Amino acid sequence: MRKIFIFLVSIVLLGGCKKEFVSPDNKIAVAADWVNPDSPLKVYYDGKYVMSIAHPGISVNDTVLPCRDVNILKKKLGCEEKYTMLTGKKKQCYNNYNEYSFEFNPIDSDTLGMCLRVYNDGIAFRYVLNTADSVKVSGETTSYSIPDGVDRWMQSYDPESYERFYDFGNKRGDTGQEYAYPALFNFAPDVWGLVSEAGMHRYNSASYLSSDSLVDGYKVNAARNNKTISGEWSSPWRVIMLGDLSDVVESTLIADVSDAPAVGDYSWVQPGVVSWIYWAHNHGSNDYNIIKQYVDMAKTLKLPYVLIDAEWDEMKDGKTIDDAIEYSLSNGVKPLLWYNSSCGWVNGAPGPKFRLNDPDDREKEFAWLEEKGVAGVKIDFFGGDGQPIIEYYIDLLEAAARHNLLVNFHGATLPRGWQRTYPNLMTVEGVYGAEWYNNSSVLTDKAASHNATLPFTRNVVGPMDYTPCTFSDSQHPHITTHGHELALTVLYESALQHLADRPESYLAQPQEVQDFFSELPSVWDDTKLLGGYPGDYVVMAREKDGRLYIAGINGNDTAKVVAPDLKRLNLKEGKRYTLYTDSATDSSQWSITTIDTVPTQLNLAPRGGFVIVENKN
Image 1 (cartoon, rainbow, N blue to C red):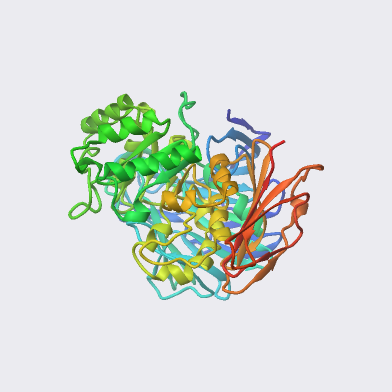
Image 2: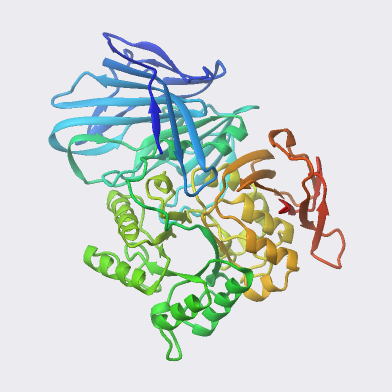
């Protein structure tokens, strides 16, 4: 249930405005000078300048409406919000913020406003337009000014899939170079910022960043949007998470600013672990016998789901998808089915195609799935971030919810808070994940460092279908250890956690490892960062139903000693734990031991990892 308490509301009429807007704990401040059109909003943390928001404003019908000449300021101080998530890194979410709403003097018939929220773990702002005419919001003038010398981890913008590495640097880059959200910045030793966006409505397009020499930083660029609007319109929230590295990793700010779900019964939403066919074969879902192997694996490991991937509409040997669904359900495993979105990669791409684009066809297809007992859909190959595609995502989520279907988006945009607004959204790819062992050799040498970057970047903003934990090799080898691969299933949050490896690979592991998969949660009650640095290493603790999981990986090609910050945990006396890590000998890949205390230090092999699980009573 969502509750908002407002302790103080005031309206101030302003002829000019030079103000500072602060978080409830006074750690974060935004200073604004609305009189000077060239003056940016300056962001401070603990009294120290970190970055600026320059040139705030939007373009309407190609005419710039700047944020200047403020007329009205509304303040809502001490806002508190509590809500429950069915998925994600934290079940009970709580945030505290101060809200400031500005209205600027009208230009013609258009009135521009800005809503600024200053949270204890960051800031968020969005533009609000009121217009009596039918207009197009043709762009945005916002830029983020980030001084050179600030370390940064940024991904080149690929609107088709968001599948690139997060490259490290400390300079802005060439003018016009494009970057995707989220972007991570290390402003000072203990001050980090993660920039993204959230609160996407069907009339919005998504945005990305590009290098802008005018502000020594990055301009916000909205993707194509030809939607005509009138009345009230709002942009997505521009979000900057701020604090130490744990504040950023643990932040729920993307969900905090997103709309609460519509009233309804979501008790049918059941997250879980999935056996996944594609990785081992590049094909396979047109082969009934291969599907049976993955169903049998799911049954043996007590996984609730199997994903029947592409080409199931072309089943061989006289079998059909009906046979595969019947076999899966008869073995107590719920099937998920793949679809081509048919708006991105279509020609030469696998099917089924063109079953979801037309609203009537979509309703018919989803009704058929519901009748057959299919639990959800994986929809792939979307085509960019323009407004029509954003609206299509939302149409799919809403239609799927009407038919009690879980949703997994692949070849897709970044999650931007939809995991809260639409609780049936389980996961989104939008990541350079393990399936790339099929496509290129580049992941082999870079995977360990890349894997140790994702918990600080991509996975902070929403569920991430990396498809982890491959002990064997696909078309291209992996050189991360078994301990590293197992740890990814805990480090990476995804409400449908797809296990990518072959059945024979999982079933060849020690019984303790198989039991681990049988009990593995895919959603968490709480998450804490216990140590790490992007690309170097990460140690994270997660909790589910009172049971503690601690996982860590080494992103280096050399051994590393890590010392988790156990003071952040409320460790219980008398508990015992199972430690899964890499063997120091050649006789086995595993070292699996029962321990009485959580170690204060762990020795990690090159590209190695570990998991510690609190034993059941």
